[in-house]
Length: 261
Length: 153
Image 1: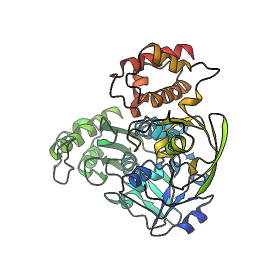
Image 2: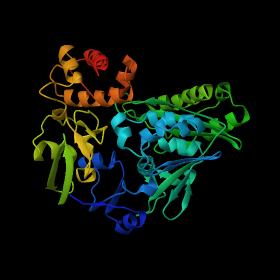
Image 3: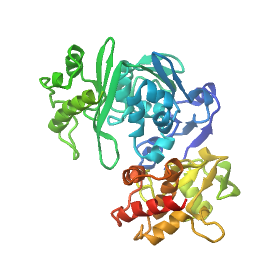
């Protein structure tokens, strides 16, 4: 790993002031550190935000669940309040990586990285999330731009993620047996205004599967998905699964999610 | 360079290290605590698991500077009065290892599990050890050893 200057920061102002075109914010480091070791990324300055208290914690109201950016996966997985308000979100957090990854990895880090197979982005899409940064609020459908790409500007820092509490929701994924990243993951959420189907792992970026979502908005049952056609065009194809297989899995896991809602 | 102070296995240590030093390197190369193993070095295999402030973490993927002020326990810190920890005893008794490379991480991770669940089922043990890879045993005896340790802890 190439060397860098490590900065531990105490508040958002200090952290964002240090940011430059050759810096990275460090939360859990579960992706940033291996990426630096593998030579995929290198930075002059690493700005650790883990000690900024304001960025940690969980707030639950009748309408929303707001999770601070540096809140760890294990805290979300074990939060009694989240289990009550949006149980599927706790289940999702419990299924990320392994216990040691969950002890360090954070929600802000996960969505800022926008790995095409990460779990949290699908929750953001399904639960109409709003991403709060140090300078603005971004809705999830505008946040995830492309593979490992988000709407965040250089030096912009995620402070919290606000999820809308749905009527019903469920996340089902087919995990890669080694990494536990989703080969395909489908997050179905039924809101008063309609249904969202956040799909991760299938394409180069998380997306809302609108064909399934509109079928489910008309009739919220797994049989409503039967006649929806999912094209394999644009689907990821690799040693783990072909594009055709992933297209089929999107449908199957959407049905599974509806049945388990 | 960063000056950091940690409590490692009950002893306070202060050292100056390059900013990019990860905890596994700090333990092995600065403190000569080579019981913590490094396998994949990218947080997949779990051979490097230690406890930091009571929680199991992968030491290859945590910066030493980031853990300034923390209490760290490694496999070397488990022995008390010359006696092995019940988890180590159980691994020995039930042949929970062959080559032993993954064992320090397995033991540290399994101890963390028993802090959360006193009598875990086979499935709970296997789920918890998701991030610890063993290429020798086939895991059967590891699971048996964790179950045995659960009766002694």
